[in-house]
Length: 411
Image (tube, rainbow, N blue to C red):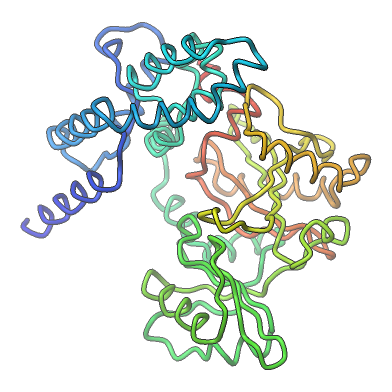
């Protein structure tokens, strides 16, 4: 009993220190509404931390709301208004003062982060607010959306275990990134020997939790180096070994050969980092369908970047053709420039290689996990065909909603 209470207190402390905003949107409309979208947001709010007793959860959310509405939300509002305000005024004719008052209503009033308000076009069309789910509230959304039908606990554990998922999907004929070894902190795996043998490795945790601790490393001649998933350099053997040991402190470590990009794409990343395709599949009644697809291209990291930076382009799911991002997104000028440059380097007349195979494999993979409402599948297009890295149910909400509309529009 004491142990359980200690875990609850640690969870509360972690949430209070790491979060600045409540786990869902907050509104007086929750008290009485017939609107299914507002009712859905109410359920998202309650599903964010289901293991926490409701009285404690309400205390936590009250404190987070006071932090957000009292100070931190205002700081975020003014910072975001400085970033996007002039662009929206110049391009779409909405004055700074009008933007400010709409942001107060949206961000301070119901706790939708101001960056998402711009990304989703809500500063222009605030009446569409309840159609969208912020990344700050996405955990509760995925729990609520998956729980709308009975979920198998075994499938939840299986998808979270990247090694077990690889074994299952390989048995179904889906091409997966091979796992050379699954290593525990007490194992006797010779990491340097594996690196010398394979020359270029990618290492991640068995749970694959948001890429935390993941890194790639290489052995070229006498030199050993690498790069963290977030983009930080591992300049020598000691740094690589340190990253490996830190990974094993988190979880079992998975060791995989690094994958090569298809020749059609390889020139986009001269240093050989993997270009990924994210294909999100969703349950649509009794069928599985494609929600959206994107091409994610790593670019050179600047000193001011806190982590790896990507240029993201939309992909037509039906034909595999690259497209500029559309929708209500209001990207910064620098982001627009990067997208335009990368789009110009691609042959826009050619579909991505082996596209239909990637789509069919993604649909087949979701059939093995059909309880989930949606899964994001991360692929690398290699010279020998598409190779699946992993599938994730807890994917971010912003980009899919920019491309396809709010997750709650269909309600």
